[in-house]
Length: 92
Ligand SMILES: [Zn+2]
Image 1 (cartoon, helix red, strand yellow):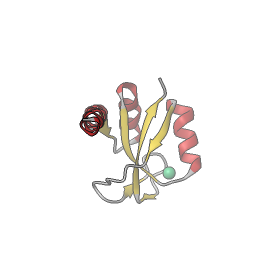
Image 2 (spheres, helix red, strand yellow; image 1 turned 30 degrees about the vertical axis):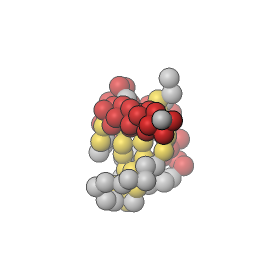
Image 3 (tube, rainbow, N blue to C red; image 1 turned 90 degrees about the horizontal axis):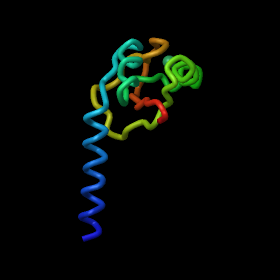
Image 4 (cartoon, helix red, strand yellow; image 1 turned 135 degrees about the vertical axis):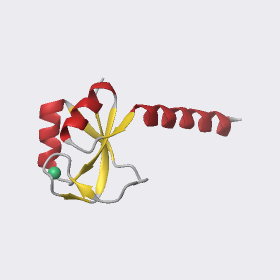
């Protein structure tokens, strides 16, 4: 019973995040995505990029999902090679 409730809550949270998360391939996309929800973007791992994104968009990095789709790409901010994608969102 408890496990079912937890599973339902987890599914709901996941569905919510999926519905509100946009693949943001460019910095412009990221800016638009964080206006309404989450941005899922490649990030080089640099603290500088994270700080600049936060300064300019008020969005902070939330997590690096274990499920990485799409493979490596380029950092949404600096354009350097990025192995992972992270989720960015504004604090409410
Ligand atoms: Zn970067």
